[in-house]
Amino acid sequence: MLNKLYRNRKGLIEFTDAVKNKNVYAKIFDFDTVKEVKFLTRESVDIVVTSPPYGDSRTTVAYGQYSRLSNQWLGISEANQVDKKLMGGTLPKEIEKFGLELLDEILIELSNLDPKRAREVFSFYRDYSKSIKNVASVVKEGGYVCYVVGNRKVKGLTLPTDEITKLFFELNNFSHITTIIRNIPNKRMPKRNSPSNQVGITDNTMSKEFVVVLRKN
Image 1 (cartoon, rainbow, N blue to C red):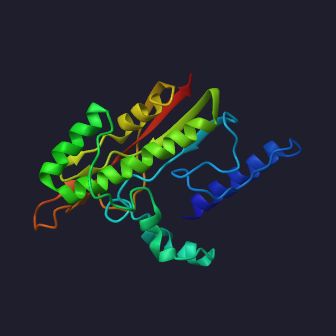
Image 2: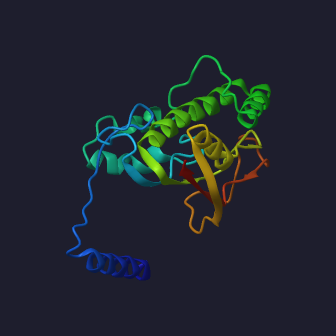
């Protein structure tokens, strides 16, 4: 732990020295990209680097659970309701087609296994596609996006979010440059879990992340 703290402090000092007197500054804006991208004009951004939610904060990556204390400390209202406000937090009554063969086929297969889980997956990707459309609108021609995503499993089916991210951006006039695969070195989650809640039946959890890089045409 001390080595990590020392490394982080050293890196922060080096960064501060590197940008000193170079008119470098940071601004923090609060908005929901699923609804809109506030404060940024169309085609004004050179690059977007982000790691969006993986799509199942209740069971896969517990964003609400892990962030509740810090959210309360920051004074965020309804800190215990984070999961409902994330992408896919509101379930639809029906599933609609995206017009992407890869994603539509997965949703059909999942619907045959568990209709409720299929609605949850659809709800996430529906919001995810809206967010990507809004983000794409503020990126300049020739600008880049770098999305770090994970391919989680639902009912034993792997959801290829890296490929779906690529397809969503291609619908918004982007070209795929590369996808970098990296191992997840440190995890709070166990390497295996029991998604079915049946004794003795386990499955692997995510061990890799995918850095999807695209450029706007």
